[in-house]
Image 1: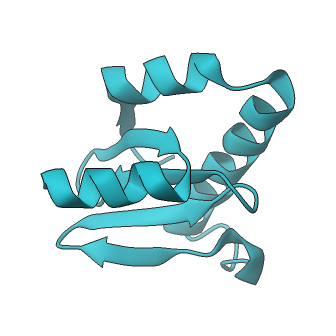
Image 2: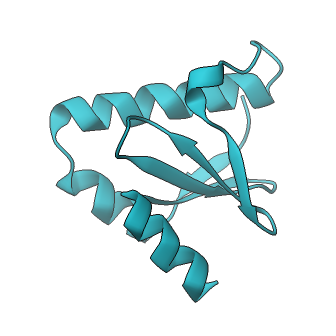
Length: 92
């Protein structure tokens, strides 16, 4: 499995989600990690997209995104709305 960590901001945002949203985030992250470990092909519905530099996003639903930094280890930085992603990009 790919080494990874969850930033404090990610943990804080994650705890604010409903159980259903948390399950969707967990599933999307599991799929992403399995993809990077070359265990599966990337499903189109995950919406993997490069934002800027080494920062990428995946979709967990129509309204929820997960931002991660591609590196070793992989860093999950934020989970939130499209607007939260925009604010994050402006801060980078």
